[in-house]
Length: 135
Image (cartoon, rainbow, N blue to C red; front, side):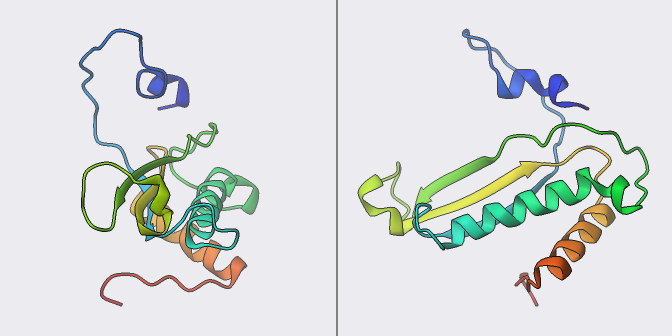
């Protein structure tokens, strides 16, 4: 499904409506801290997200064949934000206490295997180590 087919999600109408949304896969990073820090965790996390998304998008140039591949734009960055203390709302005067999950929607052809390949490729190219739960 292309970006145009997700128009109702990203460009909603001015009147409320109920949408039926099928499951959607994302690549996501969870973290904490001030998103405005120059060399902070948020900036690094967003960089990794876009690196993975572009690795998948440009896979055809790397000679990596993906079943069902089609070219499309990288979807917009999405995020969930909350405070460390769990209170409702976000206190912008305490950005260091932000908790967040940032994510980019994956195309339908990006299976778990495709995502694992892209993550490994990005980790090798950027000399990164991912800290995954249970590892």
